[in-house]
Structures are given as structure tokens and as C-alpha cells.
Amino acid sequence: MTDSQDPSLNSDSADNSTPPPSRWRRVAAAMGRAARAPFDGAGLLYRVSQDNLHFTLPVLNGAFGDQLAARHDRRAIRMSFRRYEADVAVAELGLQPAPDGRPRKTVVFLHGLMGDEIIWQTGNGAEDVRFGPRLQQEIGVCCLYVRYNSGLHISENGRLLHQLLTELLATYPEAVGELVLVGHSMGGLVIRSAGYYGSRNELSVVGSQLSEPNNQQLTTDNEHLTTNNSHWLSRLRDVFLLGVPNDGSFLEQNSHLTSLILRKINLWPTRAISGLIDKRSNGIKDLRHARLVDEDWQSEHADDLFPPRTVVPPLPGVRYHILVGSLLKSATSALHDYFGDGLVGAGSARGRIFQDPAAPPELLISTHVYSKLHHGTLLSSPEVYQYLRQRIGE
Image (cartoon, rainbow, N blue to C red; front, side, top):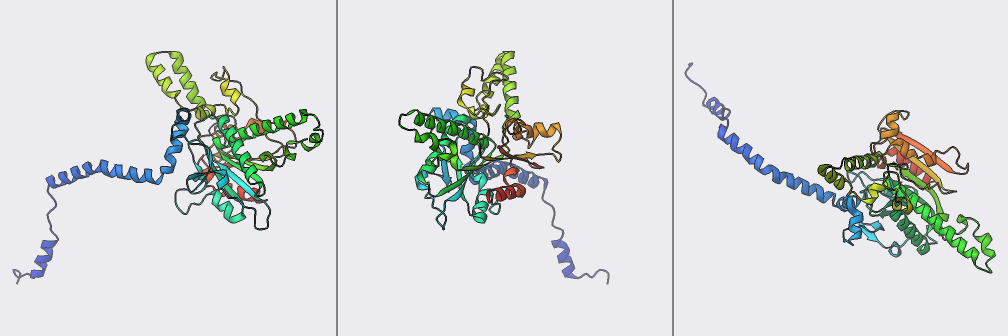
């Protein structure tokens, strides 16, 4: 009886005892995987690059955009409003008043260094809808997005933004109501520079008109900037500065200091490394001390360790909202002031010009610190969005 066994048991046992692959087969399989790895990696990089193709050109312009523009390279970005990931001429925006015929509050977004308009629209997935579309859906404002060559001098982009907003108001005087500007990082500096050049231009126009004979009536009509209703500054009500290095970037300050030291050592290797560092764009170099006007980078002392810097004060009658990110929970430490959101120090983001105790009392400045937010997550934070929504919707 003990010698007799069920044949089905023998069959199951045979199926379950398949010998493992030989050592040579395992080696061959491993070699096959190793051989495929570069192709799999290349395929992954290709898919990632295709998904983020819109970002490649802004990065190139942020790093070398001034050089591309000087060569009239077709890859050099030109400042423009954007729709459907394409440039749109002001005349083709087709802005219309609200259904009741009144002009609509208009919000203009500006990205930072190496950024583009997509950062205001979508995030990591289709469900991650950012500030612009949500504001337009929830409170009915008109949202416009600007893309610019962040490798150019900040003052160059400031003058271009001034011209773009001037054209916008001239083209749609009945459609554009109160104007709100929102800038992230370098974009906030471009906004401040545009305000500087816009106010200078307006004052020069008023001065030339007042100097003409038989124009005494203009004295009362142009007594203040805001009385000229055709100028974009007369419509400007709010400026939101998100993670903006108003007093300069510690990263660029360190880069400049490193280049300076290597150049002073004056050996062939150190000169070569210093030369490579100095290839960074004018826009990046301007971030060292937040240079907002042409005269600052044109100065013969522009590359000094402590160069002269033109004061650009807040515009009168405009509400400024200074939104500061912090990697830390506490907003009272020296680390918070220096590192801030990881790319912009909190002390720089607050800006001495916005914290001046001797500033005129009519200046309207609000400063808010958001803990445990880095430079990028300022653009997707629900808290930051609710603040924008509340203030813009007022």
C-alpha cells in the first residue's frame, strides 16, 4: 500500500518543482536589462521633456537670453501676452467690458527667472489649477499672462512692460478697469521697474505740456499722475509681490563674490572658472542687488562689491502686498531672514523700501509671511490663493 501513489500528486509535484534558471541565463538577463537601461532612460527623458517642452525655452533665455537677443536669435523670447502657449498681439486679445457694460478688473501675471506663464495656470497635473484660472472662474476678473526674456536686464524688461501696459490701455480703454499686477520673484522686480519708468514718462509728458504756451488749463488737469485716465498707472490699484528679492538674491551675491575671488587669485584655472561664471545672463546679474534702472548696471561701479543703487519707492495710491515664503516654522530667526523660502531671503523679500518707518503714511503696504513654503509652492498654496482672492475681489 505504501508503494502506491496518486498520479495526480506526482503531476502537481512535478509542476511545482520547476528548476530555477541557470546562472548563465540570469547573467544574460541582467546584461539585457543593463543594455536596455540607456534606451529606457532616454525614453523617459524624452517623455519628460515633451511634457515640459514649454519650459525649455524660458530656461535657455533665463541663462543666456541677453546673448540670444544681441544675436537676434529666433530663440530669444520677446515680451508678449500669451494664450494657448503662443504670443498674442494686444490688438488680438479682444477684451470686452463686463455684461453690464462696465470695465472689468484686469489681473496681469508675470513669472520669475526662467519661468513662463504656465506656472500661473497649471501645476503638476490636470487637477492642479493655479491662481489665474481660479480667479477668473470664481470672481470674474480678466486674467492676462505675460512672458518675457528673463535674461535681459530687469530695467529693459521694466520699460517693455511699461510699453505693453500702455498699449493695452490705449487699445481697450473701455474694457480694462482697475489694474492688478502679480509678480513672482524676478517678475515682481520687473513690475517695480515698469512703475518707475511709467511714472517718469508721465511726469515728462506733464512737464512738456505745462511748458507749452496757452496751456494753463493743463495745470489743473495734470496736477497728479492719477488724473490722467489714459495712463495705466491711473488704473493700477494693487501690486502683489510673491517671493520677490527686493533687496537682492543671496545666491547671486555669492556667485558674484566667488567670481571676484577667483579672478583676484589670477591663475589660469581660476580665471577660466571665473569666466564661465561670468557668462550668466544680465538678468541673473541684476538680481544681486535688485537693479531696477538702467543707470545702475551702466555705472562704472556696477561690478563693485557694494555698487550704487537707485532707490525705487512704492507708487503713491497703490496697495502693495508683500508675500514672503519661509522654509521654517518661525519667522523670527536669522536663518529665516537669510534663507527665507530657499531661493529668496525673507529679509530681502520684505524689502527695506517697504519697511521704512519714515515712509509717508499714505503708503498702503501689507506684509504676510507664510511658513513652511518654499519658493515654488508660493504659486500653489491655498493660503496664498485665498489672500489673493480676498484682496482682488474687494
